[in-house]
Amino acid sequence: ENWDDHDRSGRYLARDIAFNYLESCAPDAILFTNGDNDTFPLWYAQEVEGRRTDVRVCNLMLLNTDWYIDQMKRKAYESDPLPVTLSSRKYYDGINNQVFIVEKTKEPVDISTIIDWIKSENPATKVRISETEILDIIPSRIVRIPVDARKVIESGTVSPEDSSRIVPYIDIRLKGNSILKSQLIVLDMLAHNDWKRPVYYVTGYHNDAFGLEEYFQLEGLAYRLVPIRTENKGWLDYGRIKSDVLYDNMMNKFAWGGGNDKKVNIDYHHRRTLTVVRARLSYARLAGQLADEGRKEEALKVLDRCMEVLPLFNVPYDPYFPDLIEGYFRAENIDRAVSLTTDFCNHYYETLDYYLKQKDYIVSSAMYEIQLALQQTSKVADICDAAGQEDLANEINNRVTAYYITYMGMQAPPPDGDFGELQPAR
Image (cartoon, rainbow, N blue to C red; front, top):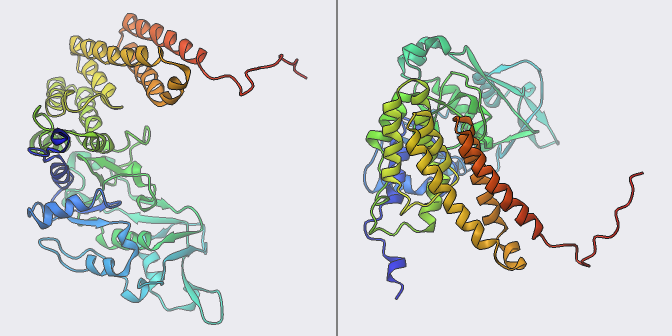
């Protein structure tokens, strides 16, 4: 009876997303992952299917444990040991779980000096907190990563045509009173990798990323650390785009196993994962960059590929679908953009029509769905307006406003049902 819900035949999406993470990376890369869900599939890809074993997957949560740090210091398949130079007595269980920041200077301190400070046995580099306990410390809040322009070009971190954009250094500004063991080990790696191996993060805006998002470069499902500063627009669209690299990865290397097969059951968990990894947003961002570079035919190919591999019959509308609509506008396929806008809005109009006809308690329980519909259609209206489609934007806004007024009129009154008389301001 429930076979249709449990039939996984032809569905290789989880495996292929793991492949896509690995294929986002340049050869011999270090890839920092955050937790179980973005690590275990990658281990499967490498350990079972032998895929991209030159990439060293480094789980930042496990990097708080001594046994895992020891693993990272050993060669694995084609990956050389990670450049961790601290001895085990500096990170074994219970040691340096937290390293406190004690500002000996307000000036930036070279990242290698920070690690040397931790290694040192000089009492001046420590803080005594009792007769028997002495702690290692970080002597400055500003940790400076120097950049050798010649070296980053030779290693392929930066292409020669971007040489004028290379910054002389990157400053990490530590927050709070301390850093965790995992952060200490990452600092050690960044200090002694010295731009030799490519370094990638699967996401930014977490403690181990050190606020480096302005130096991220989106290369697929992962971000490469590069010594080029880019102003971040927000937590969704951070990272510069090197269009040729991203195009090659997403158009020639990526797969979405079974995502476009009507016979394959792409269930809620897989659809949610595609939203979490921002699959459609990556295609949309690439298309937008290509359009800005005047490469509009390639931009349309990217957008069409996204619609082909992640079709609506298997992957319904998500928060990033409006970005695809915007991409079609920017690539000047106005008819396609308007058609997608109409279908998109009609979908959410139907949602609103359905919920706003229900009893008040049902409306209250459907608050998320109603607000999402209002937000998404409003977002598309803004996109249409920015694209010069004022009439279409006004039409959407007028309808959304009507729905909003109806929705607000259905909100529950105070428990006693009496708003009371308005009191004059005093």
